[in-house]
Length: 128
Image (cartoon, rainbow, N blue to C red; front, side):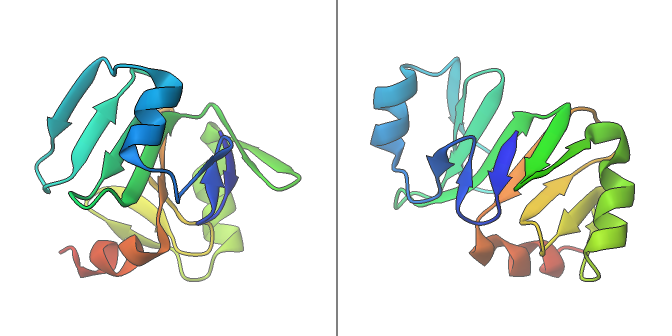
């Protein structure tokens, strides 16, 4: 996964619409509303989650290696990297959340990493 925090994931900008994803990737393997009310387009290797208004909230993808600018971090080292590089990182519901890098992941669930829109961070902080 190549991430520009809060801007784009693997070349897909956070400004992308549902229709643009459908046009570029085709019909998803599964499309559904998830438990928190987001519309998911699941392509197997990547899941896009949108609000009803069409705003992209999250992109979850398999990431054996996460590339942040010119730094590549293997998933096995990602938790230690985040804890060392992002003093605002916190844990919620088994996920390590990094406001500094705009991502969340469960260190026990390789290799899935979720890139977050900036406005999602307060929602993660509010989780108990």
